[in-house]
Image (cartoon, rainbow, N blue to C red; front, top):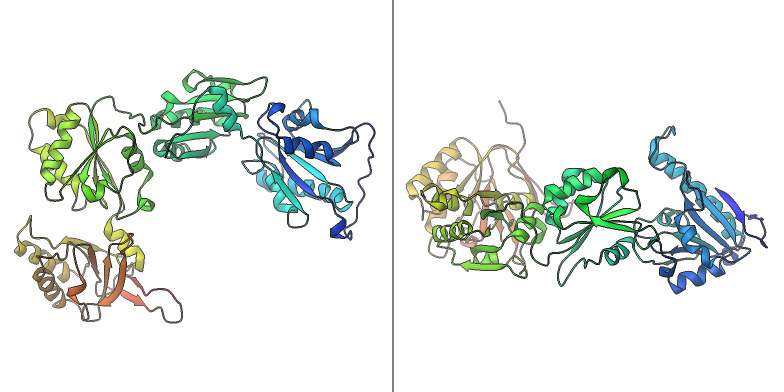
Length: 522
């Protein structure tokens, strides 16, 4: 750190820890924008010109006062005290015993202490920050250390990605699109997943990360529309298609824009395809990034109307909703659309491979010998209903378990009963799908009779209805006290094994918890 006095000023930085707070100076975190001095806001310019002290970060190898100082230069008055906060380290190695994080933490501790001397002496301090102070800005670390001690005001600035979009002449988002901001320092696989699922994105913090960022963009299928921008709005600004940039020419002050295609995300396949997508049991909170990306990339959505309606409409995307009892026809129609060149997403609740549409699509493919047999088919997993139900109460499926559908529409009841008998005798915990409907009531009662021959009446039973929706209702009961009348088609049952336990909520608060121990007695 160093205190620099411009001509006409004083170099006194005296202060006392006992100074009355009412006489202390005011701290300002001021965003000066991405590079062009003309993009400094009127408020920022006024505060900079009136400040007693102006502080700013500067790289150790910088030949001048740094980027923020250069932007604010036209607004600095004679006599202002300048505090150049020189980073001890940027991208190089450090010999600090605590490593990089400790070295930077010590740097901000020292900077905050130096600024506190001026604030205690009654001087107003403006800390300059490139872009916006609270958007990946260096000021925020000083703010964390000082804002609770002094009157503080933060002045926003024009962000680098806003300037970059203007430089590239590229709208970032339209209508209901969501903009995702990503640091290039993320692991490449994480970055790929985030880019694949984003409507539009900005990737910050390039430099040494550039090659990995470009690789992630290629893997996500967005590199073709991505734009590279460096030093946006400054005299040295440059923009180019991402694929045209040499990795050894990329500075840290650069970013990648992945603008929206407004409802049409580039798909990696050049031919038609079918992707069976799991939506999870209910709600966007259980939709995986991969599933989100596939839904965005699809030309056509096909599925049971209730499930199609869970996917937000996208401009230019066709939606074909059908009745829930025509799975084979739905699958065949999706394959025909794909054979004609469309990217089709067949949507399914929960996980599509568990009593759902993945098997229906593959059954049709397996029975075809013509063009439909050659359509590429992928399955994107989703959170299953049994996973969601189990999580609501703890870990009832924590040991070996079996999954059985009680619907006898596609298999005889005698098969269901034989499987229940075998699973119960083997002491599996059981997840029971499709336990009852308006017209199927006696099957559940017969299934419970089978289970009661092998389980104690005290065996925990989880009754989970419509998990994740507004109608969610989850309760823990026992096999002896289970009332079949509360069960319908939106309900999933989990019946414990002989080792499954319930932890009462008494004294702890919250719901009862259910778990099956990982070990089993010899």
